[in-house]
Length: 158
Image (cartoon, rainbow, N blue to C red; front, side, top):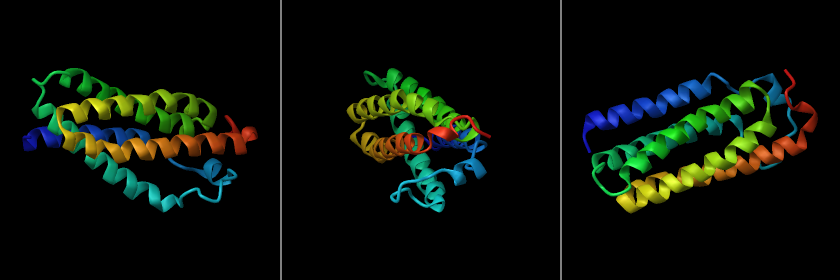
């Protein structure tokens, strides 16, 4: 794995974070009813930072083996899930649409899962680096669903 490739993948991952992060929790989000197990707001930034670093390292590993069978589709799916990642943030936080965010997060999570499986086949280390992301987005998907159902009146409200 080259340092240049790692720098590019870190740049892409954190560009995704920056785009998604422009739609951040606001007064609307703070006003939502939340389950008792909802993580405190301060947890999200360090978790996402760690996940984006791990994702970038995984992508750089697979990129370094781009001649391997399935590497091209694995990288394409990785880029697709980055787009879906930023889209989810805008649907949920930017547009206040937990309903649409939930409908988007299902194919988003499946894309992450398939990417992880393909990464694992190319490099078990790359797959292992992606595994926490699969778990976190699975948890976030369930939380998204619960927040939507607990706050049906809040859909699309400013």
